[in-house]
Structures are given as C-alpha cells and as structure tokens.
Length: 281
Length: 159
Image (cartoon, rainbow over all chains, first blue to last red; front, side, top):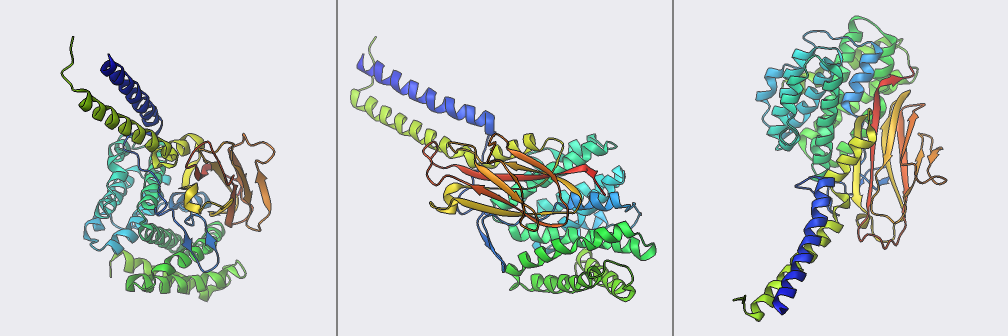
C-alpha cells in the first residue's frame, strides 16, 4: 500500500512536470535554445557608448525596398552572378557575399524578377550552408516554400523576412556577430553599387537622396567592424569603407549632385570594393 | 497482488523521479528567454510589418541591480516602424520608453502599461533608443527576460 502511494505520488509529480513542459513546448516549440548570460546578445562596447544589447543594423531587405520605392529599377547584369556562390571558400568571402546575395535577392524580388530571385535565394542558402548556418533553411523549409510562391511578391517578401529573422536570431544566439557585420557590409556595398551604377548613367534625385542616407548605417558598421580590425581582411574592408564614407560625408555636406568630382570618386570607390568582394580578391 | 520491488529500491526510484521532475520544472522556469518563444511573439506582434531586428537577454545577464536597460536601433527618414516590447516573466508589464534621434521622448507606456507596441514614422535617419525600466527585485519568476523586436512597413512611406 505504501509503495502504491509512493508510485502514485511519483506519477502525479511526473504528470505535473511533463504537463508543464508540454504546455511550454506548445508555446515555445521543441528543441528550444535558451539565451544565456554568455550568449552573443552580450554586451558590445563601442567607442562611443556601452550598449546593453548588440547594436542593431537596418535590414538589407528594407534598404532594398527603400531604393525600389525611390525608383531603382531592375537592370539585367547589375547583380553578382549566382554561379559565383560555389567559388567563395573562406568564411570571410562567404559572409560578405551572403550579404551581397541577400541584396540581389531583395532587388530582384521587389522588381518582380521571380526567376532570378530563386537563383539568389539558392545562392544565399549556399553561403549559409558554408557558414554552418544550415538551420536557417532546414528548420523552416524555406527553399520549397520560396519556389512554390514564385510570382507572388508579397509571399516572397514574407519568406525573405522569415529568413532574415532566422539568421538574426541564430547569429546572435551563437555569438557570430562577425558574420552578421560582414554580411551587412556585403549588403551595404551591393545596394550602394547598384544605386551608383544607375546614378552614373541617369541622375535621379530620389535615389541619390536614399544613397546619401546610407551614410549613417555605414558609420555604425565601421564602428562595429572596428572590434575585428586586427584581422587583415577586416582591416582592409574597414579602410575601404572609411574611404567611401569620406566621399559620402562630402556629398552629404550639401546634399547635392553638384560635387561632380566627389560623386565620380564615390562611384569608383564603391565599384572597386564591390568588384573585389564578388571576385574574391 | 504483491509487488516484487523492495521498499529500498522503490525509495530510490521515487527520489530519482522527484529529482527529475524538479529539474524539468526548473528548466521550464528558464524558458522565458528562449529564441523559440521570442520568435513566436515577434511574428505575432509584427503582423504585416517586416522583421528588422530583435534582441533578448535574461535579466540576470545585466547584473542584479540594473533597472534601466537601453538599446539603439537604426531608422530611415519617413519610414514606418513598429517596436515591440517582448519582456516576459516580470510581475508587471515593463515600462518602456522610445527616444528619437535627438533623444526626445516620443513614446512611453508609463500611463498605460497594457500597450506593448508602438508604431511611428521616423522624421530623420539615425539611431532611436528603446529604454526599459525593470523592477530590480521580482519574485514571480527567477529569471525574467528583457526583449524587443523592430519591424518596418514594406508598403508605407510618406516620401
């Protein structure tokens, strides 16, 4: 009788314990990862202030949308080739080109170039797989869902945003902010490249205004990358971005395209850096 | 009916079971700040807004005495944003304040803490700040979570 009572008590405890956990699993999903004090969401000290959270950067998808609304139209051949995805070997080139392809994907999607978009979606997956970020796509079944929604821009944008969220959470949870910053750098370079190439041929005040508006996020990016300046590739990237910022600062000083020489310098600097990134040299 | 289990063995099993159950329950107490739960709340809270960024940390990560927690997030001029307060596990809804690029207070839920999100159009590009005022001692949960997410409206722009 005593034994029966003990087993009954144990059974009740187990039921309570697992009952609660089942409820938690329903709410939170299985295979949960819990943030810890040592996670990437840990403090990041910058030159200017101590932040309680890792500083957030703008979404490359949103930036692409801002440019599209300003009148940035799709021009074939402007993007990186999705076929280049297989040639990026180092974590550095994979990380930067992850950003490049994210911008190309957004650029095509917002301009209703669905077939090109699927190629870039796969290129993004190739980059994330190479960086051991496979759960972004595997856990969400994103590629088949993207293919299924070809032609439906709203659904594709929703899926891109889901990809962006999965990536953001994973990189912060696994303390891989170097990948996050390099990827943002690649996205920033690619969107600025497309904008400057279009402005080079045809001036558009709205696009120029949005391009000059990227100066703030560039400054923030340079500050964040500074934590990695001891690495050669990072140092070179920081130097190139700082040089570009010098031109943007000058152009922003009067917010006009009258500084023709400075604009030409900006175009050249962005072009040189972008080609170096996509050609991996 | 007789049981073939000796009382000593059954006691061991009972203790093991209790220990297992307690471990499971305490694990549950820490699930407030999990990426799954924050992701779920982010998706639900953003609605039609497109994900920009999110951040979350257990309160303990800030030290025991920190009551004011801040984070900066980037905005573009004339763009439409939503900020979600996703703090969980506190005895009351956490007060959150939002400051613009010039550090002017543009929103506070102080007078109505049931408000957990704020939508706004940025007047100029730069960094906005979200500030959380959290209770330093909270008995409801051993490890509350400080969390927020930002979304942008892909359709809307005033420009």
